[in-house]
Image (cartoon, rainbow, N blue to C red; front, side, top):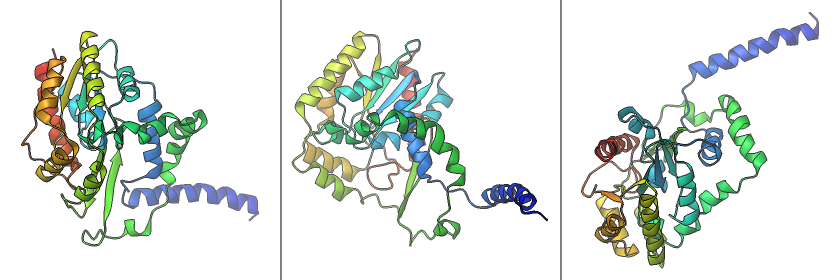
Length: 299
């Protein structure tokens, strides 16, 4: 048989074998190509929504817009970023994502860290905003096409040993939510890093003032603004309150005085896998509670 004929026969066999393996092998939830596409899509894809959820990693791991959309007749998106600060550039971006023909709702998850000088640098968000056009195109339209052919890691093919593996497990959704959990489950593991983060880094009072002025401007423009403190754990809240200078009662009073609506989740116990971020099942529970609250607020 001629070599050209052999190659012609082998190519479809190889393709068929690849698809058979992908069907037979377990699905890997974490895919770095998909993660790159996720962040590029969230930041650069031109689409607008009725309800926009804004905040840091507790938002993008803790609020599922699909749960919101299943309960309300509106579109929703999660615009959370890592270590995010609620500064003007980010809030401008949030506003641009609003559908001008919809109810126009901005939901701010105001964490203590999001008002600190370190968070206000917004290194993760700014880095994504400053991507070159060629890189944006690559992440949006090229890389994700090849995620199907991402190689498997050998350990992913073995039965998972919870006691031996220490890892975040993630699934990225175009809604902006990252479904996540951690093995081993340890609701105190994030405490040391947060203690370090708040050392010489309390909340910025000028940042609080600017945020409240923005809430007032949005309300005057007919935008419904909702704020809340996303639940973590009692130990994490105590650490944040002590080290950051964040006083939820004061923040709530100011938020409401400037025209916003504050949702109180104080005392709500939800499963956090590290003390800061919600297990994906708890994230969907919180999202359902947010849906119920928004149903009362919105027409």
